[in-house]
View 1 (tube, rainbow, N blue to C red):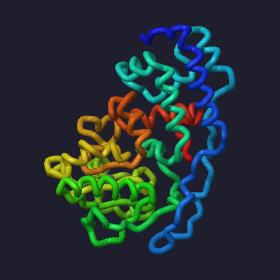
View 2 (view 1 turned 90 degrees about the vertical axis):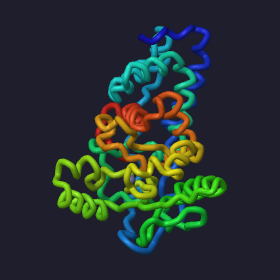
View 3 (view 1 turned 90 degrees about the horizontal axis):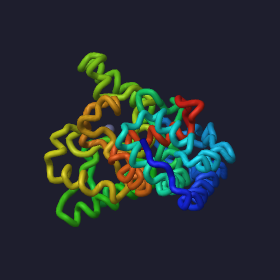
View 4 (view 1 turned 60 degrees about the horizontal axis):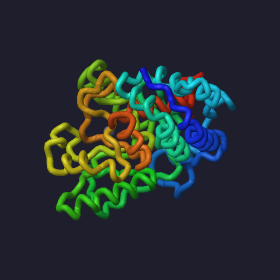
Length: 307
Ligand SMILES: [Zn+2]
């Protein structure tokens, strides 16, 4: 049971809501197609990444203020927490500090929509989605674990470089073994895993096409792509420092029921420093809870909705 909001907090909450309404309805959400396009190689030329977000967040004017006047946690907030099936301890934390929470939510919603896009077994990306600003990895401070050309969205590559440079300063070299994977590539990959392990096991370790974070161009697999990585010096360093550079562990240990995937100590998604802080402060460091909450906040009437 959350505590009711003291009336003195209401003006601050209204300011936070105003920021939130502005960020939600301004129609100026940053787009994924603003950068230099990767033009070579696989699947180039698709324009699907230029699509504007297909749904607008739902806040109805006055609804939240009405909820606050009754001294209750806004109904919309509660609805999104319900939809995301947040555990009680996380709900309690949010309900206890609604004003601060909504302020941080507004900041996150003001950023590139793909940083927070929920991509999991229930929420696939469209088959045609390809980020507009993929670049080839530059290998300044990190190195390649495979011979194939690897790509990331430019902002993810920059954040990777910054993180790798910090690791290097401490004598550690990060190895990237997988980055952007197209829908077509994922189709082949899932088929290979299914042949090797059978369908049931393949589903635990490999995503079906459209359901991989790698299609966002924002996810990286480090090192051996096995949980041996967690025991290496590089693995321990990344776990401790990734958040500082906007990277978030997607599939933590003991959260398979929540994420749908086995523990993957090597798989990190770039979500940006604001969202990392939001995840750590309000969602116990669990990316899936935060992304699911945001998804329900933005698409309450269409929870399967996709950008
Ligand atoms: Zn991965």
